[in-house]
Length: 280
Image (cartoon, rainbow, N blue to C red; front, side):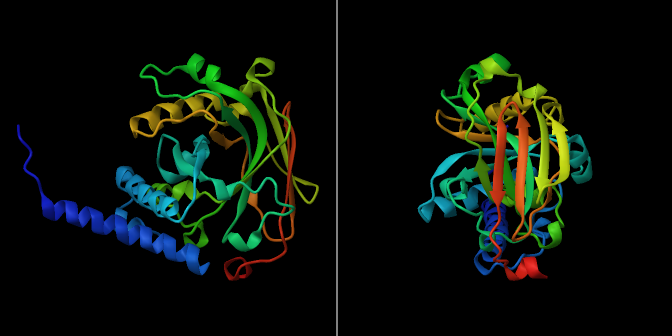
């Protein structure tokens, strides 16, 4: 059966993608959160939402940004249930999102930040084979480090469904990596334990098993999905594998610290300069 091209349908698709991307770009530019984009995309068309994410990625690349990895989101069954899905999602990490070497996390670059503690994998080999399995992804990991992902949403009040967060680069913000590098030969990610503190108050706890049953399961899912999208994971990239416990607000002026055994500690002091969105 031959499919007849539908120029009108393709034009409408492109117009929808462009409109949603423009709304999210304007929210970033003005530091004013926007309304959800699901009024344009619907609540279930994840492929359309990824098309918006790709549009935003091309916009970032055109501005001089460089892709350095990916992040995995929705690895918690509770969060999946909240958004009405049964699978994770992913976003793109750009070089300017890594604020590890800064004295403070720049709060003025964020709208509605929250922090979550994760295991970050750094790859030493490409993951582009057709028969990827857990052994393959394990062998491709150079080392793991403790990480803090500072998630953010361009959508006002975090009023998101699955299409909103996927389109919005999986609600990505910034990230901080720990300095203690541990090869997988020395630990099992599923056995990791995490405690996260805000100004020395314990606010979140969890284990490796909270991340899709095992952070390596999350890495395998991403490797297969990225390959299917024609953009496989490559050597040198960073993968934020998903939260080990509940995320918490990270307003200006606080210090967030995560202790992930056996990966050590990662700390993120936030600057005291809020945006107008954070003040409201």
